[in-house]
Image (cartoon, rainbow, N blue to C red; front, side, top):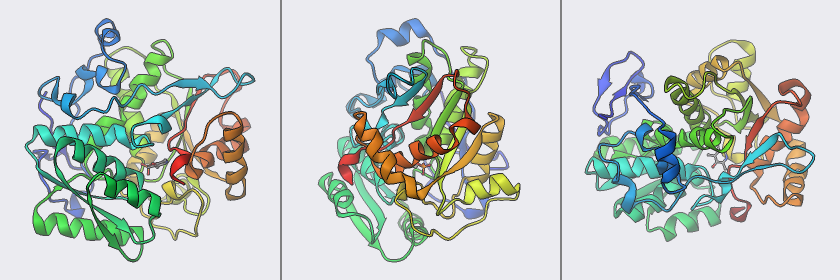
Amino acid sequence: MKAVFVDKWNNEYVPNRTEWKPEEGVFRMKPYPVDFPIKKIKERQASMWRYQEALPFEKADTYASITLGEGMTPLVPLDADHPNLFMKMDYLMPTGSFKDRGAAVLIAKAKELGVSSVIADSSGNAGTAIAAYSARAGMNCRIYVPASTSEKKLAQIEAHGAYIHKIPGSREDTAQAAKNAVENENLYYASHVYNPFFYEGTKTFAFEIWEQLGEKVPDSLILPVGNGTLLLGAYIGFQNLKEAGVTNRLPRIIGVQSESCAPIAEAFISGESVSPVENKGTLAEGIAIADPMRGEEIIEAVKDTRGTIVTAPEGDIKAARQELAGKGFYVEPTTAATYAAYQKYEAEIVHPDETIVMVLCGTGLKK
Ligand SMILES: *Cc1c(COP(=O)(O)O)cnc(C)c1O
């Protein structure tokens, strides 16, 4: 199908554009028909690419030279005492986080569009994922990071051959530097925040859960939310499943923010629009986004599913990480924060008998 971007006024754009004007807000994909032919899907390789009738490519095999086999990560119960609480193990992705879903689709689509150089900004996992898939696609890649980014994450980006620009100041300063370069040099903006193809990748998260639960959607879905690349992807994915008629409902989406940086949770509670906050410092740095570009879109999505947004108790993150490791899951602190929030709010946000899926987003090996 022909992929088309739309802005907030529904104006259409060709998807190879590289300029991003703030007054247009952030682009979305124009909805297109999707299909889930389950018999055909099951005959294909166990990866996120088996849902090809719901992906925005002109040719079904665009991904073939780029894939690292990403997707179809395990879905297992937390432990024997929690048979209905499933962990979706996206920390087992090729570069160690769910960002591979978005990066693989975005880069495969960029290749289909004939792009040869990409640029992105990220404090870590998104940059790593874009760097890895650009390398695989034979594209030049430049990644803008805050100067404070951890050495291990930088080493991983560099190992994939990307050029790193370290920007002093805040995460927002880094994003601005990348946008300036995009505008001045006319490079393809492979942004996990702005580029809708990233969300066309993260939506496969929903498809896999649906298939792994025996073609059913869970009652509740608990996931971290900073920029919302997984939350919005999951929402789009479950909507796709509903539109295609393979389910008649959406799971309640429960987003977890850091209590030290919670602009979306605050707006959700106050009913006012999302405004930037000060990041007071948190172990959960993967969700510490002080000025989320898609904040309103995230709140709309959560409300549409009758979900909610909670904050992770900072003082419980270390213990939560230890507890998950004690069950065999070695994850990074941001992922442990999701579990810490679940433990604190369990009685308020879920029913003990319902089917709950929580995501384990990032590997503990990086941090
Ligand atoms: C990116 C990331 C998050 C947060 O995702 P958003 O898109 O910012 O909502 C959480 N955990 C890990 C491991 C990540 O890489």
